[in-house]
Image 1 (cartoon, rainbow, N blue to C red):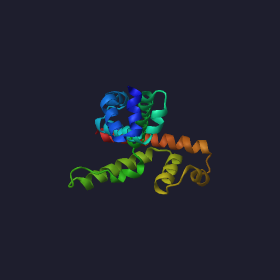
Image 2 (cartoon, helix red, strand yellow; image 1 turned 180 degrees about the horizontal axis):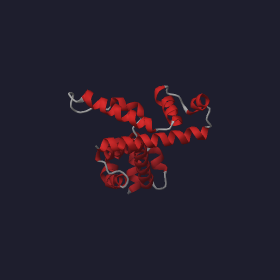
Image 3 (cartoon, helix red, strand yellow; image 1 turned 180 degrees about the vertical axis):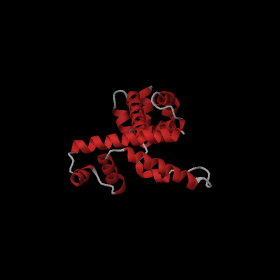
Image 4 (cartoon, rainbow, N blue to C red; image 1 turned 90 degrees about the vertical axis):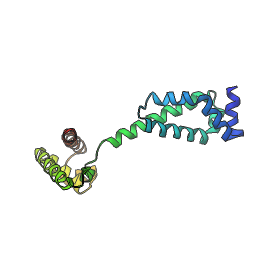
Length: 178
């Protein structure tokens, strides 16, 4: 029975997709929701899974366990989405200048207060961290260029960069809670 449904993907793709959605849709949703709790992200991931089912229908049909293959695809999509979301949650320092208040009247006041707080926090960094952050944020240099400019080893650049970003993120997290 199941093999016939998956063969229907090759013979009549739209009908095969409908049958898979009807018969296995809940399993796919359950598999993805094991990883993702956000409903909007869940919808996007499930949509991507169905797109991949359509694109890779030949591989699915020839697989020994087509349903397992589909559920594995769903899991992989969920994990990729979580990684992508985690990466985008880290606020890059270049985007701080775009942080604005909801109220247009308080916009300039909020900006000046945040700038003062950032400058105060930047003064707490060591000289090496300040120089490195200047190279990263203002000049946009990569690690290799920073090594050459500041005369540091590759490991020192990574360590100092990690510590500086950690200090600033901790400070910005405290600011966002206020």
